[in-house]
Length: 391
Image 1 (tube, rainbow, N blue to C red):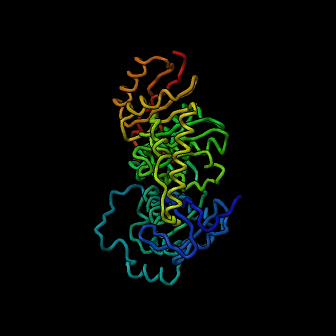
Image 2: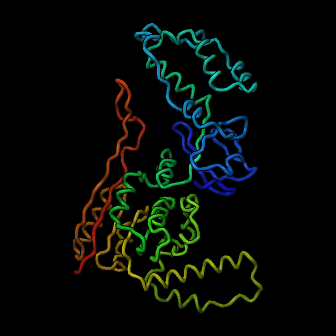
Image 3: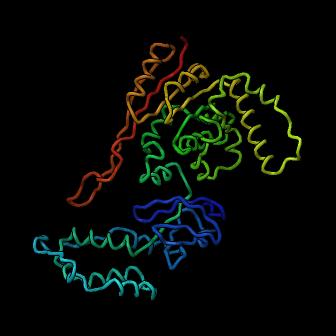
């Protein structure tokens, strides 16, 4: 298993929290207003356990960390029958004061010992039902036992990290993303066109599926490079051979034959260019090379998951698809896809044009407490898919 290096990205999981971080020697990160250094993560393997000690994540024993992180199992023999006689007046139920807890933490007392003291100082813990006791202990574990696990970034973990900020990825849930990739028929060696506004999540998924094949991936971005930021691609830490065939080009220049001619007729710079100017020239030349290549290439797959008008994007790019190629359009609203559906039916030359949605719901499976999770994404948009055939 590969080890983490200085500058790599990692996904930290702690209880039900997930965060994407970059590992830098001597540079802290902030989690829940805590300043944490990741120096000890460097050199450790994927899936390692760490315990927060002071301001540093220290390597933890795997068996002990698993035991601390798992949910408590409470026997009903030492519990009350119901909670009807419990009264939380906020004063006398817990005799361990906040100042005493802070003193224990500053003295280096472990989180497990603090929880034991909270239980012993609680006047109502033994009167609670087994369910209430388990809920109480799990809540205190999340607060006082900070066991982190570090993972190499993956598409599934990136989707999980955006769970509490779904508007950034247009509410694209991982089950919908999996369905989108399956309908697009992306494989090693495919020529793919992507128009997306999901923080580069769809683009990163396509790069991972193609895995440095002989095909080309065109990231078509409105307004050119200003909107071509793809943080998810940076999080994945792809090797250079994976990104060699990826081109970001402005979608408004597609089909404009005069763009390349105007670029070639641009006046040369008289002053000696500095390093910043040389990098800008390289990016500009890369976009021109991608634009020339796009005009000569027929696409095997087209994916549209954009906050802009999907119908106008589809009308602009559909003629670049080859026969037997697949297209998929993701949208949060069904009305947008209905407009695209009507356009495709009038145009002809397409089969299997369908609108579908996915529904994935996680369930909590516990004794006498099996029910769906309350906090989850209730909607993940719709998908319009189809295939290009001879008209």
